[in-house]
Length: 434
Image (tube, rainbow, N blue to C red):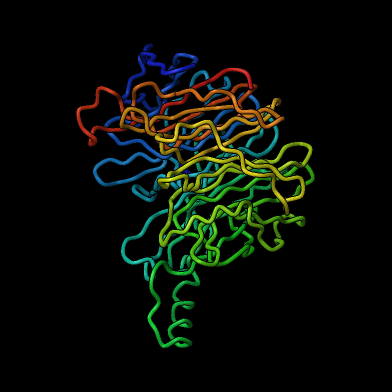
């Protein structure tokens, strides 16, 4: 192992010694059961990720200070009621990065008492996408997040192009599955286009989506899922009760239509069937919406998916939709989530519950973004949406089942912040039984 690195509109006060400046390394600080704050002191904390197994919950995020970004992780052993102090995951200072659509991803595998934490993240390069060399990194912990292995590449480090927008999950056999967008072939395809057409490529470089299964030594056994994907939208991956692997992403369909696609593997991710268009939304856009889908599969094998798109009822406006499928080939008619037309919702994230599904997203309220939440019954009936983040600016939620409770985390800036430059924090709200 490596070295020791290291409800509607609520406004709960953070007490018992935990404030927006964060916690002291090495200590476990209790927080109010309904709302926790995670932060590295003096840093801007953003892009959270959550995972849970039983009563164990892990939260990962990126903290940026003095232009240096690092990946931190905090552990809860009581279902999200309290969290340990954050510990740095990456062994080299500054060797991490993220954007709102590509947060670090953390998963728990193994049996109780012998769980392994796997963290996957991206490190952004600068410059044009055709020549940049974004990388993906990973690290593991087998001692409850106290120490982590030195970070390693999850791919050939010589690959050019941008990559990331990753998602991760764990199968029943303990195998870790990762899906990401990749630009390794972009330069070659641009050259081929120029030779065949005699014209210079315009617009975003061609991108592909890959699936990988993490091997014991940390390398990924890769499979190409599809090409010509919409770049800069996060991916989603889920595994069914029988081991089928499902990957969802935003695809570029003819006419530059940026709609949601899904592909299925029935051999553990070694190969994928041709993609299926979830809904013909026909969102025509010569750019990236930066708003990917969220995917889950229940014990009966029913696929649940939610996503953002634009509707044109008069003035074009953004909306959230939900659909299901029993075979991964045909989907139910899309159902619109109960969000006000003026709210401009986006970035949905979903989990399954015994009664259906739970979805969190962000939307505009009183001129600023807030995190909201609704449930979907098995019959497809939506509950009334409610705001989780109070009067604070809040964006890009993530959601997880933890010991029978729903946990939602997001990037937040205090309502008393005097400027956008004031450090942000991670809020974790525990909503109670699923």
